[in-house]
Length: 40
Image (cartoon, rainbow, N blue to C red; front, side, top):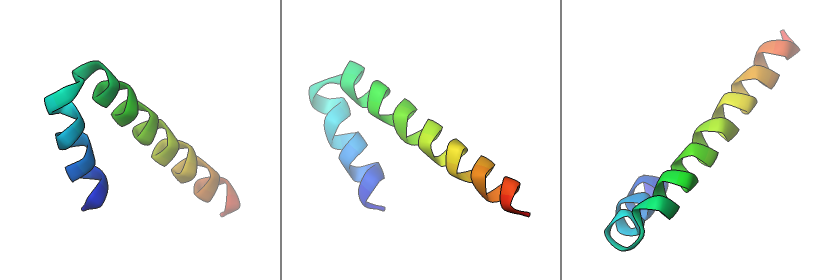
């Protein structure tokens, strides 16, 4: 998966940025799941 490799690459250079980015991605995926649940 591309996103995972990008996060791994970021962790080597800037752990704080990688942590922020992974949190953002998780929240986006969560929001997407919530909107899909609302449609049913």
